[in-house]
Length: 311
Image (cartoon, rainbow, N blue to C red; front, side, top):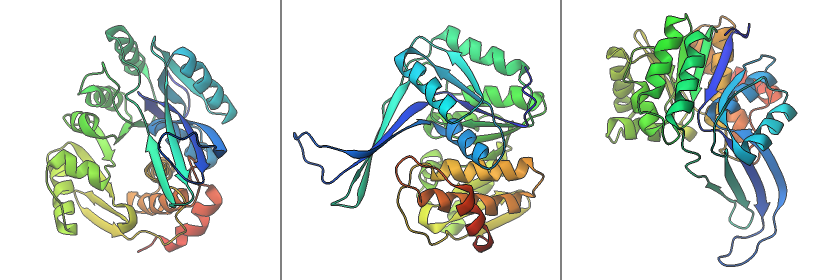
């Protein structure tokens, strides 16, 4: 299967992202919200959305089913994304973000999502045996029913077909994905790296050493650790780059990591060196923080912030 686009994304557990705002949250009371938004979400979907904003095209491969799946497909059409659904019996999940004005706080709720049958997982593998692209982004949590080494298996297939694989997951998705050797770049957050290593990682040196062990083990060629308000760290065999976060007005944390990854992969696909692509990621992560609710990075903000992302 060839889409003639350099980048493709896979989202095994996508979600309809619902967001709205309330004045104050009370238990047991009906609260009226406003500023309601519905967006197609999930790691790889968000990456494709940002790449589209940047002028590229990254076809979205994803599991979808039930009433939620039909609504999800409609949302992808609204965002003019190239759809490559893999049908399932279960219904696509809904994730909810609520902003409380009184406390200036954001509350995020999500569910496990549908369980994937052995036949549905086999259909996904069959597709990726023949998929051709230059960059494949494997992003998001693993749904129930999918094996722990799912991302490692997919990465091996993609690498054998000549793709560079980018991994962004957590828990068993991250651990299983790094159990192989087909990953070019992995992007854990600080919390995800701590959970993966079982270590506190309280200093920059600790973080760099943990990332370096992933590289030296051959699990990934490069590790980009996002540190929230403390910036990000890029580690490879012959590089160690630490950049601070950019100071911007913080409106929502939703989609910052996905925006970071999308801008970095888009820059890499355009021939940028990985250090330069890393700067693009820093700018895009900051741009996403500036957008409310489930909004993602806007190109005009990335362009404005990029000159400031040099450390």
